[in-house]
Length: 500
Image 1 (cartoon, rainbow, N blue to C red):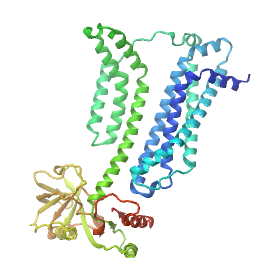
Image 2 (image 1 turned 90 degrees about the vertical axis):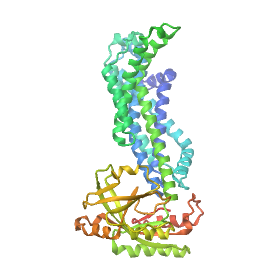
Image 3 (image 1 turned 135 degrees about the horizontal axis):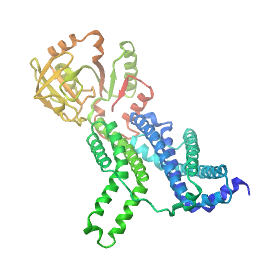
Image 4 (image 1 turned 45 degrees about the horizontal axis):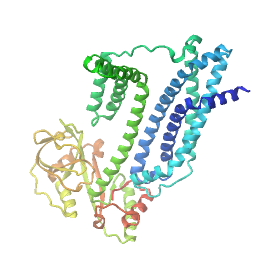
């Protein structure tokens, strides 16, 4: 019998023991391949939500790969510990260190190859269902099946490298043990789980910090949350079991002493795998939550934004040509429309949580309000203003000013907040949560105070108002609005933002 045959037969004989390791590896390959299948889909960039979702999926792909490495490494480590006695017997029978290393390496590569094939096959079987669900969420009707060459190559190459590296790590795990330790195998008594009170308190603090920054700074929340989760499973749970043991009324009741003592050992033994499963599950849920929330936000923006097309003016020379092409498409389809030119000044804010605000003149606002058939504003005195809150805003207005006063940084101007409006649609097309409306004289004064270096603070825009498209309902692919929007999108106008 050749050495490769011996390794292959060894895998067959230990099929039941290898099954958990094989299953976990195949599952990781399947998840990774499914994400890659979505990322490399040729139609994924047809919508803004699709491209944003692809970016999130790419980040999740990297994270999943890192945790796949840790997860598979832990699985093979646990499996090898269970086979210590077998390795000890082989060593006594004359197997050299090189032969032992070669045996483990070949076995790992066999399991790795089968896991890659099984994971990819499972991903292909579930690909139709996954793409159907994805297309439903991001609103792409033609997100159909395709032959995923790039996804296949990425998955095979990534996990081939992963299994080679893990096989090298397992050789280190075997070489560190002596023959006597291998023979004893898992029969050695376990030491009592120990944990540090200080580290446990530190872990609780990290979890608290992560919860506090959850809706403020996601980077801090992620780092502290992951670290806190690790300490929760490795330290806090052991401390909790120790505290339970101190309660004699609880411990000496029935079989509580047995399961509490056993639970402490089980939690300590499986702390790392529980940590990795928790983090990977959280990441997957976060990706799903992002896609669903982005989809809901897009629907809300669609229903609340009355402007069918928004053209940001960056180059006056190309503007006429670009707008002419848009006009030709609308006229060809006999769509009545109205265009309006609007502008707003972007200014930093003093003494507020937010960093900047869009300032718009009263006449500009009233022009938009008249076109949308909503109430216009009365005249404003100098240093008076009105705050218009977008329906998309999720932040309290109080974050923008203190004691009914808003103070700009450039220039240093202070405005009294006369009124706060909450319209059911976005009257200002600038896309900010809040817009500050000031008198025409004040707006002209602000513009004159801007230097040439800060001219970009004034944003100019052409908006298209199409009354027929303001039905605020979801579109079918046969609707005129959907067809024209797709036509405009395919024109690849970089300066055009299709909103409706």
